[in-house]
Image 1: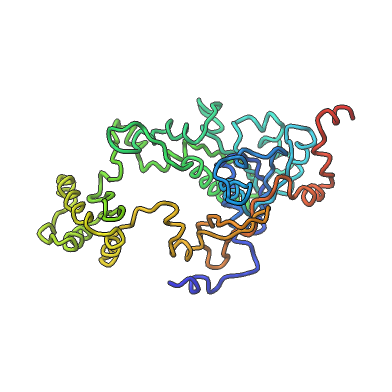
Image 2: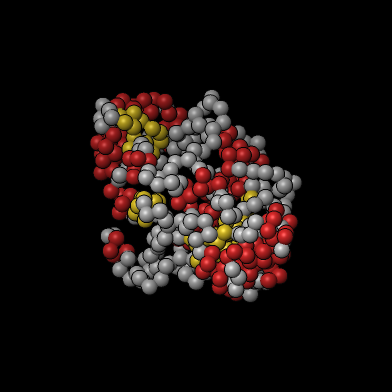
Amino acid sequence: MKKADFYRNSRADCAGPCEGLVVVELTTSWAGPMAGCVLADFGAEVIKVEHPAGEVMRRQPFGIPGSGLMIMHETVNRNKRNVSLDVREPEGRAAFLKLCEGADVVIENFRPGTLASWGIGYDDVARVKPDIVYVSISGFGQFGTLSDRACYDPVAQNYCGWTSIAGEPEQPPMKAPTFLGDDLAGLHAALGTFAALRHRDRTGEGQHVDVALIDCLLYASNGHLTAGAYGIDIPKTGNQFPTAMPANVFQCKDGSAYIATLLDSHWDAMAKLIGRPDMTGLRLPQRLERREELNNLLAEWCLTRPAQEVVEAFAAKGLAATRVNTFGDVAGEDHTASRDMLQTVRLVDGVEAPLTGPSVKFSRTPTRIRNPAPAVGQDNEDILGALGSSNDDFHKPRSKRAAE
């Protein structure tokens, strides 16, 4: 299918399928901002409430060349609006609750009990907006024996068992190189938001949605938690799979290729491709028993060929293979451009940067990066003014408020 065919009935008069949805996001770091990012990319009006000093992601490494802005912050906070409030102070708390009165959703990712202690927990918000969908993201959840513990993404990965099977055999535990638990929690939070909104639209009832990094990692562990309950040992397999053969990284003349052969028919086609028709007919149990032999056979064939030649030869036979790319490699791929996964955005300081685009494509209501991540308090005058309050009311020094 051509892109033009997919979007042939698209509309240009809306921001996305969630246009009209109002979200108040009080978050920091990644899991909470990721949930808000998904909703904002889908067209919702997401108002990020940020401390006047700015949150931690504004100071993370990997800056955008020519700009003082950080890649991670710009990636996860685009398409949002920004209000700066100190919600620990009476004025900020009052403004936050006023914002919630006009919202459909609140997203927060503080340690359980923190926002309640500040007077802006679920019960506080539900008093002013009974049908609110209040989404709380945390490491261990809002209840449970460990719910009061501090938790970050790598802690969650290690607690839930994920790192115990990551990496090569005989090597120490290995965490994922990305914020895997945070990303999964952000996506599950967005999914939970849609489910709770569906219930609200049917019944008029709001509710508290509890998302834990631990639960999301366990949910996405391919049944390993059940295996653990039976005492079944999950071995480390590195780049290989216990249920597929061959599936591995193979060194080529100028790089590496990953080849995955899952079906018996795929193995037969591969055996013919590499000039070993005598190997056709081997079924999966037989291939698993002869893992080392068959890996060596394929490794010898790949070693004398450029990676791209290997990939194209496999693709021509309908077999799964790819060059092992760096992020730099894939950023230059034509397919990345054709999928709009890098979109040029003019940031708030005027610098243009290629940011990662939305993942889901909608044929009727296309999505895109509409706006860059806003500066701290960029929308204070507009949003706080609409609440009937002056921006200055929320940013007086503590000593000045006390004197008044």
